[in-house]
Length: 196
Image 1 (cartoon, one colour):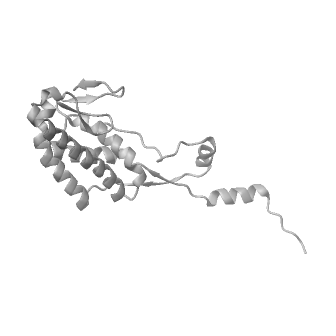
Image 2 (cartoon, rainbow, N blue to C red; image 1 turned 90 degrees about the vertical axis):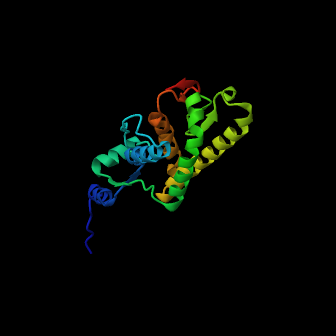
Image 3 (spheres, helix red, strand yellow; image 1 turned 30 degrees about the horizontal axis):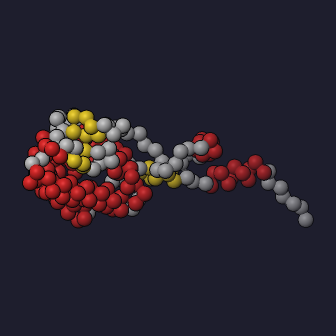
């Protein structure tokens, strides 16, 4: 009986050719557009800034030398996700935030409240709020922060990627500030308050 030898290189080539890598990218551009749309609806105003493009990257993956080499041999299939923000839960959160914004707007304008680096609100200067209103404003801020956190979580869940919640929060945090009118306060990366 004759043994047929297949060269190892040919076997390796067939194995490598059979591999397909699927990278699901966090849809950064779609997230910016979705965030802008929701924020503009909440604010009830036109955008304060143009959409800033962000680079795409595989979610949670920094390409290693081995992956880069493999990608050179085999073109990775890329599954690009669109960001869905039209679920009943998201719409309900957005409606609640739109109603609350009307109550919060004077405190944004006075500088009493501002936006933090993680996409939430905080009392920046409670002295700018009359004493009899302070507890009510703190309650509004707490409800707004709870709804924002629920919104980020719900968007990630609605898109089948709960691991995207941090990326969604980060995107929204930047877009809340970008869409805010001049004069509103926000926290910079160092945690210092700045006026837009």
